Amino acid sequence: MTTDGTVQALSMPSVAIHGGYLPTPATQLDKLFPGSGVRLHAKLDQLQLSGSTKERTAQFLLDSLEHSGALIPGGTVVESTSGNLGMALARQCTQRGYAFVAVIDGRANIAATKTMAAFGARVEMVATPSDGNRLRARVQRVEQLLAEIPGAVTTNQYGSIANPSAHASTTLPELVASLGGPPDHLYVAMSTTGSLLGCQLAIERAGWATRLVGVDAEGSALFGGALGERKLPGLGAGFATPLSQQARPDAIHRISEADMVRGCRLLARREGLMAGASTGAIVAAIGYDLPTLRPGASVAMLVHDGGGAYLPTVYDDDWVRAQIAGAEAAIAVTEAPNPFAGKA
Ligand SMILES: Cc1ncc(COP(=O)(O)O)c(C=O)c1O
Image (cartoon, rainbow, N blue to C red; front, side, top):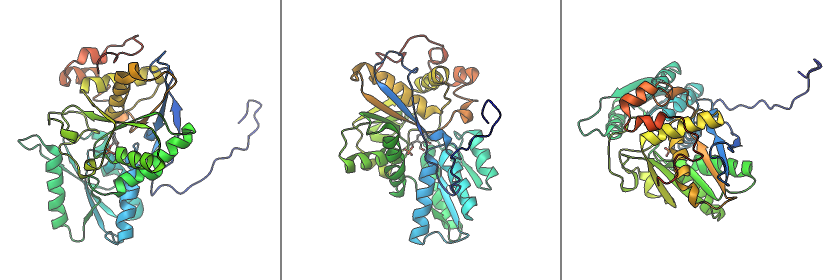
Protein backbone atom coordinates (compact mmCIF):
# COMPACT_ATOMS: atom_id res chain seq x y z
CA MET A 1 0.00 0.00 0.00
CA THR A 2 1.34 3.44 -0.86
CA THR A 3 0.84 6.54 1.35
CA ASP A 4 -2.12 7.66 -0.79
CA GLY A 5 -3.85 4.32 -0.11
CA THR A 6 -3.40 2.74 -3.54
CA VAL A 7 -2.06 -0.79 -3.85
CA GLN A 8 1.25 -1.02 -5.72
CA ALA A 9 2.01 -3.98 -7.98
CA LEU A 10 5.02 -5.80 -6.51
CA SER A 11 7.13 -8.46 -8.11
CA MET A 12 7.36 -11.28 -5.56
CA PRO A 13 7.85 -14.77 -6.94
CA SER A 14 6.08 -17.77 -5.47
CA VAL A 15 8.54 -20.67 -5.37
CA ALA A 16 8.39 -24.28 -4.19
CA ILE A 17 11.21 -24.37 -1.66
CA HIS A 18 9.72 -26.15 1.30
CA GLY A 19 11.62 -29.35 0.45
CA GLY A 20 14.88 -27.40 0.55
CA TYR A 21 16.82 -24.18 1.05
CA LEU A 22 16.12 -20.55 0.21
CA PRO A 23 18.64 -18.28 -1.53
CA THR A 24 19.53 -15.62 1.06
CA PRO A 25 20.76 -12.01 0.70
CA ALA A 26 23.93 -10.47 2.09
CA THR A 27 23.97 -7.18 3.98
CA GLN A 28 26.71 -4.63 4.61
CA LEU A 29 27.76 -4.25 8.27
CA ASP A 30 29.16 -0.73 8.63
CA LYS A 31 28.46 -0.24 12.33
CA LEU A 32 30.02 -3.42 13.75
CA PHE A 33 33.63 -2.17 13.68
CA PRO A 34 33.39 1.60 13.12
CA GLY A 35 36.35 3.17 11.34
CA SER A 36 37.82 -0.20 10.41
CA GLY A 37 38.22 0.79 6.76
CA VAL A 38 37.17 -2.63 5.45
CA ARG A 39 33.94 -3.41 3.61
CA LEU A 40 32.24 -6.06 5.75
CA HIS A 41 29.30 -8.12 4.47
CA ALA A 42 27.27 -10.85 6.16
CA LYS A 43 25.26 -13.55 4.38
CA LEU A 44 21.99 -13.94 6.24
CA ASP A 45 21.41 -17.68 6.42
CA GLN A 46 19.34 -17.31 9.58
CA LEU A 47 16.56 -16.56 7.06
CA GLN A 48 16.33 -20.23 6.05
CA LEU A 49 13.02 -21.90 6.95
CA SER A 50 14.54 -23.79 9.89
CA GLY A 51 16.83 -20.91 10.75
CA SER A 52 20.29 -22.05 9.65
CA THR A 53 22.77 -22.83 6.88
CA LYS A 54 22.09 -26.51 7.53
CA GLU A 55 18.91 -26.20 5.45
CA ARG A 56 21.20 -26.27 2.40
CA THR A 57 23.20 -29.22 3.75
CA ALA A 58 20.02 -31.16 4.54
CA GLN A 59 18.69 -30.73 1.00
CA PHE A 60 21.88 -31.92 -0.67
CA LEU A 61 22.29 -34.85 1.76
CA LEU A 62 18.72 -36.05 1.18
CA ASP A 63 18.90 -35.49 -2.59
CA SER A 64 22.07 -37.57 -2.75
CA LEU A 65 20.50 -40.47 -0.80
CA GLU A 66 17.43 -40.32 -3.05
CA HIS A 67 19.51 -40.28 -6.25
CA SER A 68 21.63 -43.22 -5.12
CA GLY A 69 18.49 -45.23 -4.35
CA ALA A 70 19.57 -45.74 -0.71
CA LEU A 71 16.57 -43.81 0.58
CA ILE A 72 13.30 -45.31 -0.59
CA PRO A 73 9.82 -43.75 -0.31
CA GLY A 74 8.63 -43.93 3.29
CA GLY A 75 12.14 -44.79 4.53
CA THR A 76 13.86 -43.71 7.75
CA VAL A 77 16.75 -41.26 8.04
CA VAL A 78 19.04 -41.28 11.10
CA GLU A 79 21.55 -38.53 11.85
CA SER A 80 23.71 -37.20 14.69
CA THR A 81 23.14 -33.48 15.15
CA SER A 82 23.93 -30.63 17.51
CA GLY A 83 20.55 -29.17 16.55
CA ASN A 84 20.54 -27.22 13.31
CA LEU A 85 20.93 -30.10 10.85
CA GLY A 86 18.34 -31.97 12.90
CA MET A 87 15.80 -29.16 12.52
CA ALA A 88 16.45 -28.90 8.79
CA LEU A 89 16.29 -32.68 8.26
CA ALA A 90 13.18 -33.01 10.44
CA ARG A 91 11.49 -30.33 8.34
CA GLN A 92 12.55 -31.70 4.97
CA CYS A 93 11.95 -35.35 5.92
CA THR A 94 8.35 -34.72 6.94
CA GLN A 95 7.81 -32.69 3.79
CA ARG A 96 9.28 -35.48 1.61
CA GLY A 97 7.51 -38.31 3.48
CA TYR A 98 10.38 -39.88 5.45
CA ALA A 99 10.67 -40.77 9.14
CA PHE A 100 13.56 -39.05 10.93
CA VAL A 101 15.47 -40.04 14.06
CA ALA A 102 17.73 -37.30 15.48
CA VAL A 103 20.53 -38.26 17.86
CA ILE A 104 21.44 -35.27 20.02
CA ASP A 105 23.37 -34.60 23.22
CA GLY A 106 22.73 -32.43 26.25
CA ARG A 107 24.24 -29.35 24.62
CA ALA A 108 21.46 -29.04 22.00
CA ASN A 109 19.27 -25.98 22.45
CA ILE A 110 15.84 -26.72 23.90
CA ALA A 111 14.30 -24.80 20.98
CA ALA A 112 16.06 -27.13 18.51
CA THR A 113 14.88 -30.24 20.35
CA LYS A 114 11.29 -29.04 20.45
CA THR A 115 11.39 -27.94 16.81
CA MET A 116 12.52 -31.39 15.67
CA ALA A 117 9.71 -32.98 17.69
CA ALA A 118 7.20 -30.51 16.23
CA PHE A 119 8.15 -31.72 12.74
CA GLY A 120 7.47 -35.29 13.90
CA ALA A 121 11.05 -36.44 14.46
CA ARG A 122 11.98 -39.01 17.09
CA VAL A 123 14.64 -37.30 19.21
CA GLU A 124 17.17 -39.48 21.09
CA MET A 125 19.48 -37.86 23.64
CA VAL A 126 22.77 -39.61 24.41
CA ALA A 127 24.28 -39.36 27.89
CA THR A 128 27.61 -37.56 28.18
CA PRO A 129 30.31 -40.30 28.24
CA SER A 130 33.04 -40.32 30.91
CA ASP A 131 35.63 -38.96 28.43
CA GLY A 132 33.26 -36.04 27.63
CA ASN A 133 33.28 -36.80 23.87
CA ARG A 134 29.60 -36.28 23.11
CA LEU A 135 30.05 -36.33 19.35
CA ARG A 136 31.60 -39.80 19.40
CA ALA A 137 28.75 -41.02 21.64
CA ARG A 138 26.19 -39.67 19.16
CA VAL A 139 27.88 -41.28 16.18
CA GLN A 140 27.98 -44.63 18.01
CA ARG A 141 24.25 -44.38 18.75
CA VAL A 142 23.56 -43.67 15.07
CA GLU A 143 25.39 -46.92 14.19
CA GLN A 144 23.21 -48.84 16.69
CA LEU A 145 20.01 -47.32 15.29
CA LEU A 146 21.02 -48.18 11.72
CA ALA A 147 21.41 -51.81 12.82
CA GLU A 148 18.09 -51.78 14.73
CA ILE A 149 15.73 -50.02 12.27
CA PRO A 150 15.09 -52.04 9.10
CA GLY A 151 16.11 -50.11 5.97
CA ALA A 152 17.26 -47.03 7.90
CA VAL A 153 19.98 -44.89 6.30
CA THR A 154 22.15 -42.05 7.59
CA THR A 155 22.82 -38.80 5.81
CA ASN A 156 26.37 -38.91 7.32
CA GLN A 157 27.02 -35.18 7.49
CA TYR A 158 30.58 -35.78 8.73
CA GLY A 159 31.73 -37.63 5.62
CA SER A 160 29.28 -37.19 2.74
CA ILE A 161 30.61 -35.09 -0.12
CA ALA A 162 27.02 -33.88 -0.62
CA ASN A 163 27.58 -31.70 2.47
CA PRO A 164 30.32 -29.47 0.97
CA SER A 165 28.64 -29.69 -2.44
CA ALA A 166 25.69 -27.76 -0.99
CA HIS A 167 27.96 -24.84 -0.17
CA ALA A 168 30.10 -25.08 -3.32
CA SER A 169 26.95 -24.94 -5.46
CA THR A 170 24.77 -22.54 -3.48
CA THR A 171 26.30 -20.68 -0.48
CA LEU A 172 29.41 -19.27 -2.10
CA PRO A 173 27.94 -18.57 -5.57
CA GLU A 174 25.08 -16.65 -3.94
CA LEU A 175 27.50 -14.66 -1.78
CA VAL A 176 29.71 -13.78 -4.75
CA ALA A 177 26.62 -12.71 -6.72
CA SER A 178 25.49 -10.48 -3.82
CA LEU A 179 28.91 -8.83 -3.54
CA GLY A 180 29.42 -8.51 -7.30
CA GLY A 181 32.66 -10.53 -7.07
CA PRO A 182 34.64 -12.77 -4.72
CA PRO A 183 35.55 -11.29 -1.29
CA ASP A 184 39.21 -10.76 -0.34
CA HIS A 185 38.60 -12.56 2.98
CA LEU A 186 35.89 -15.07 3.87
CA TYR A 187 35.15 -16.19 7.45
CA VAL A 188 33.30 -19.48 7.96
CA ALA A 189 32.64 -21.34 11.23
CA MET A 190 33.51 -25.03 11.33
CA SER A 191 31.89 -28.12 12.77
CA THR A 192 31.79 -30.93 10.18
CA THR A 193 33.79 -28.41 8.06
CA GLY A 194 31.27 -28.93 5.25
CA SER A 195 30.52 -25.21 4.86
CA LEU A 196 34.20 -24.29 4.76
CA LEU A 197 35.19 -27.13 2.44
CA GLY A 198 32.37 -26.26 0.03
CA CYS A 199 33.50 -22.63 -0.09
CA GLN A 200 37.10 -23.80 -0.56
CA LEU A 201 36.15 -26.06 -3.48
CA ALA A 202 34.24 -23.25 -5.21
CA ILE A 203 37.14 -20.79 -4.66
CA GLU A 204 39.67 -23.33 -6.02
CA ARG A 205 37.51 -24.13 -9.04
CA ALA A 206 37.12 -20.47 -9.94
CA GLY A 207 40.78 -19.65 -9.20
CA TRP A 208 39.88 -16.78 -6.86
CA ALA A 209 42.45 -15.28 -4.46
CA THR A 210 40.00 -15.21 -1.53
CA ARG A 211 41.68 -15.88 1.83
CA LEU A 212 39.55 -18.47 3.60
CA VAL A 213 39.50 -18.31 7.39
CA GLY A 214 38.12 -21.21 9.44
CA VAL A 215 36.62 -20.31 12.79
CA ASP A 216 36.71 -23.03 15.43
CA ALA A 217 35.98 -23.28 19.15
CA GLU A 218 38.56 -23.65 21.89
CA GLY A 219 38.23 -27.27 23.01
CA SER A 220 37.46 -28.58 19.50
CA ALA A 221 39.59 -31.45 18.16
CA LEU A 222 39.54 -30.18 14.55
CA PHE A 223 42.95 -29.54 12.93
CA GLY A 224 44.92 -30.93 15.87
CA GLY A 225 43.08 -28.92 18.53
CA ALA A 226 43.13 -30.12 22.15
CA LEU A 227 39.76 -31.54 23.17
CA GLY A 228 38.15 -29.63 26.04
CA GLU A 229 34.79 -28.83 27.60
CA ARG A 230 32.45 -26.73 25.39
CA LYS A 231 29.02 -25.53 26.45
CA LEU A 232 27.70 -23.86 23.30
CA PRO A 233 26.55 -25.89 20.28
CA GLY A 234 27.11 -25.18 16.58
CA LEU A 235 30.85 -25.01 16.05
CA GLY A 236 33.78 -27.25 16.85
CA ALA A 237 33.89 -31.06 16.79
CA GLY A 238 34.97 -33.82 19.17
CA PHE A 239 37.05 -35.54 16.46
CA ALA A 240 38.69 -34.65 13.16
CA THR A 241 35.77 -35.26 10.80
CA PRO A 242 36.48 -37.11 7.52
CA LEU A 243 35.55 -33.94 5.59
CA SER A 244 38.12 -31.93 7.55
CA GLN A 245 40.90 -34.09 6.04
CA GLN A 246 40.27 -32.28 2.73
CA ALA A 247 39.80 -28.81 4.22
CA ARG A 248 42.72 -26.38 3.87
CA PRO A 249 41.78 -23.02 5.38
CA ASP A 250 44.38 -20.27 4.93
CA ALA A 251 44.06 -19.46 8.65
CA ILE A 252 42.26 -20.86 11.69
CA HIS A 253 41.05 -19.02 14.78
CA ARG A 254 40.05 -20.91 17.92
CA ILE A 255 37.64 -18.76 19.87
CA SER A 256 36.81 -18.89 23.59
CA GLU A 257 33.15 -19.08 24.61
CA ALA A 258 33.53 -15.68 26.31
CA ASP A 259 34.50 -14.13 22.96
CA MET A 260 31.62 -15.93 21.20
CA VAL A 261 29.23 -14.28 23.66
CA ARG A 262 30.96 -10.93 23.19
CA GLY A 263 30.79 -11.21 19.40
CA CYS A 264 27.10 -12.14 19.44
CA ARG A 265 26.22 -9.26 21.73
CA LEU A 266 28.26 -6.76 19.69
CA LEU A 267 26.43 -7.82 16.52
CA ALA A 268 23.05 -7.50 18.24
CA ARG A 269 23.74 -4.06 19.76
CA ARG A 270 25.52 -2.47 16.83
CA GLU A 271 23.80 -4.01 13.81
CA GLY A 272 20.44 -5.20 15.16
CA LEU A 273 21.23 -8.78 14.12
CA MET A 274 20.77 -11.63 16.59
CA ALA A 275 22.90 -14.62 15.72
CA GLY A 276 24.08 -17.85 17.28
CA ALA A 277 27.37 -18.65 19.01
CA SER A 278 29.30 -19.61 15.87
CA THR A 279 28.53 -16.26 14.24
CA GLY A 280 29.67 -14.53 17.44
CA ALA A 281 32.92 -16.49 17.08
CA ILE A 282 33.29 -15.20 13.52
CA VAL A 283 32.79 -11.61 14.71
CA ALA A 284 35.59 -12.15 17.26
CA ALA A 285 37.88 -13.69 14.60
CA ILE A 286 37.36 -10.72 12.28
CA GLY A 287 38.04 -8.39 15.21
CA TYR A 288 41.36 -10.16 15.88
CA ASP A 289 42.40 -9.85 12.23
CA LEU A 290 41.14 -6.32 11.52
CA PRO A 291 44.37 -4.48 12.43
CA THR A 292 46.16 -6.52 9.74
CA LEU A 293 43.56 -6.16 6.96
CA ARG A 294 44.15 -3.72 4.10
CA PRO A 295 41.87 -0.66 4.15
CA GLY A 296 39.18 -1.12 1.50
CA ALA A 297 39.46 -4.93 1.62
CA SER A 298 36.22 -6.81 1.10
CA VAL A 299 35.50 -9.10 4.06
CA ALA A 300 32.57 -11.53 4.08
CA MET A 301 31.14 -13.75 6.78
CA LEU A 302 28.32 -16.24 7.09
CA VAL A 303 25.57 -15.76 9.65
CA HIS A 304 25.10 -19.49 10.21
CA ASP A 305 22.01 -19.24 12.40
CA GLY A 306 19.81 -16.79 14.28
CA GLY A 307 20.00 -15.90 17.96
CA GLY A 308 16.52 -16.84 19.16
CA ALA A 309 17.51 -20.34 20.28
CA TYR A 310 20.43 -18.83 22.24
CA LEU A 311 18.31 -16.44 24.35
CA PRO A 312 18.58 -18.73 27.42
CA THR A 313 22.38 -19.03 27.03
CA VAL A 314 24.46 -16.51 25.05
CA TYR A 315 22.04 -13.63 25.68
CA ASP A 316 21.23 -14.47 29.33
CA ASP A 317 23.55 -12.67 31.77
CA ASP A 318 22.90 -15.15 34.60
CA TRP A 319 23.67 -18.15 32.39
CA VAL A 320 26.86 -16.54 31.08
CA ARG A 321 28.00 -15.65 34.61
CA ALA A 322 27.34 -19.20 35.82
CA GLN A 323 28.83 -21.06 32.85
CA ILE A 324 31.51 -19.02 31.07
CA ALA A 325 35.00 -18.06 32.26
CA GLY A 326 35.59 -14.35 31.71
CA ALA A 327 31.86 -13.60 31.81
CA GLU A 328 32.03 -9.98 32.99
CA ALA A 329 34.13 -8.82 30.03
CA ALA A 330 31.90 -10.84 27.67
CA ILE A 331 28.67 -9.19 28.79
CA ALA A 332 30.03 -5.65 29.34
CA VAL A 333 28.69 -3.09 26.86
CA THR A 334 31.65 -1.36 25.23
CA GLU A 335 32.18 1.75 23.13
CA ALA A 336 35.57 0.50 21.89
CA PRO A 337 35.45 0.41 18.06
CA ASN A 338 37.09 -3.03 18.09
CA PRO A 339 36.96 -4.72 21.50
CA PHE A 340 38.92 -7.69 20.09
CA ALA A 341 41.93 -5.65 18.90
CA GLY A 342 45.24 -6.95 20.18
CA LYS A 343 43.84 -10.32 21.26
CA ALA A 344 44.91 -12.51 18.36
C1 LIG B 1 25.32 -22.61 13.81
C2 LIG B 1 26.28 -23.16 12.81
N1 LIG B 1 27.58 -22.94 12.98
C3 LIG B 1 28.51 -23.42 12.11
C4 LIG B 1 28.13 -24.14 11.00
C5 LIG B 1 29.16 -24.73 10.11
O1 LIG B 1 29.10 -26.12 10.26
P1 LIG B 1 29.73 -27.16 9.25
O2 LIG B 1 31.21 -27.08 9.41
O3 LIG B 1 29.20 -28.48 9.75
O4 LIG B 1 29.28 -26.85 7.88
C6 LIG B 1 26.78 -24.36 10.78
C7 LIG B 1 26.34 -25.04 9.58
O5 LIG B 1 25.21 -24.98 9.20
C8 LIG B 1 25.82 -23.87 11.70
O6 LIG B 1 24.51 -24.07 11.55
